[in-house]
Image 1 (cartoon, rainbow, N blue to C red):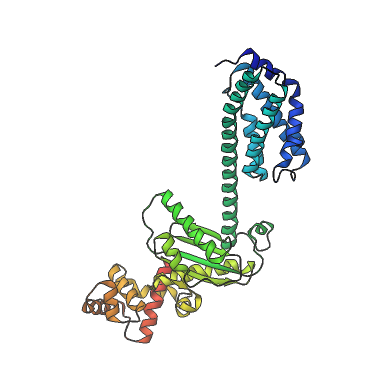
Image 2: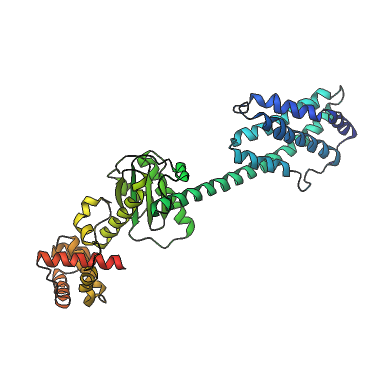
Length: 392
């Protein structure tokens, strides 16, 4: 609906005051907002004042042309919102400057209004209030998009640094590692999900966010995590021990059985080795059929030693070649060793009759030549399983 000549005339009387209004907003009105006085003077005098000046002129142009939806009219607001997001200005402060700027403009219109121009003033306020939501919407949308992009970039950079540290690609003492807040001892974890489900990427991201939240709360610090669908690696930048209930809490959050291997690193220079050890502990617990839970090196000392490769490794691993094509035999052997060679416990775990377990173990002994009834044969079978798993 076109504005009356009286409304346009009233708005025109504000045009000579555009610069004055912009300065008042940037240097007086906004100063009452929490956090605004701490902004640099050049930001106030140049960027914020220029944005305020643009906003006042945009309103006056709308009054004259009645074209509030001209393409590009919010471009400067969007550019400034992106800058404020990059600089870290809180969104609430940015939006409050726009709201307060609208109020200052209303005060200016009221001050220049003459007796009898009340109806014209109402028309202008109507235009002002109708245009404000579009501006605030453009500012908030751009700010949030920019913050989201910046945070995604920061997360990607942090993940890259953590990955480089864990893999030994970023040497200790590198200047970039200052961003990770790693100075003294740290705790390194390897997480494993026994049977990752088939699920979409959105479900995976949600599950990983829940896992990250549990880790942060468990250690009361923002842990450095590289999480994937089947587990991941974690660096806790603190000299601490993992809570015994951590695997249970992770399993509850993810809906899956989770196993955790924990290794202490004396300092940043030891994190790479600690990560390798934790990953190896995790592999060993799986290869030996151990149930999910919290595992440390002391829990698998013998198995860890037996799984080290040397000139005899390939010959030990080859002892199980005769049953390599019989996965049910290997699984029976693995379960039997995990249950301290208790045939009934093995049968219960596999859902078999104890006699079936006996028959399978006899077949393994016959074809491989390993005497599972002797301590030496048990050690050989355990070492062969571990070394074959490492090769795989």
